[in-house]
Length: 277
Image 1 (tube, rainbow, N blue to C red):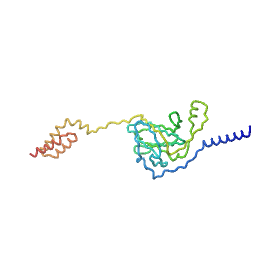
Image 2: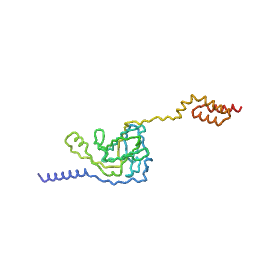
Image 3: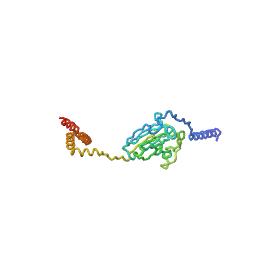
Image 4: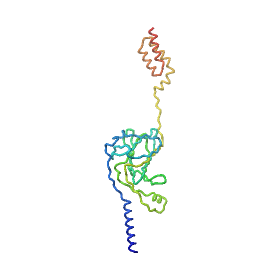
């Protein structure tokens, strides 16, 4: 082996070593906290809520146009949603897409109708789904929720994760493992957790909420009493006026109005006029 050949091999080896090191190196970016002056809302009741249909697919962009809220783990850009009042049991699918070496490490909190926190997700509850012909590599979470008990939920990126990173298997490696093929010579990508990114939200109603009709007793009484009592009340009002018992006549008139006897008042007025003659 010649001297020049040895030098070339040494240079190539050094170059490969540097490339391997740089591909796994993670740069910790300084995180600038969001100033409190930019917060739109200090409590959940003030959040701008987005109403959802019973079934819906939404693309979410966490960016500078998103509102900023105050959370227990820091100020954050967020999106807040309210489930449909027609829904009972709902399946929620949330995905955070890994794009251009960055991804949102999402948190999701559910709240009851009085805006009390019911549950909070952690990042280890999300699975990592490798990209395919239809989707990018992504964090993915699927769970069911009772919309009547927890009608609200919020999606945001926690300060606790910002600047950290995750290395995921290259999609080609994932497919090779699944098919039992030879491992390809690929580099596993690394994604840094950022405040901004793209997410997908899918809502599917599994069961609808049912209501029992509430019929007012007074309404039922009106429908049953009116045909049978109209003449009775009209005659009783006339008799009370003729006997100069105006308080009784007024009392009968009030009862007649509640029973929707529409001409009772005109009967009362006419009886007064007749009694003055």
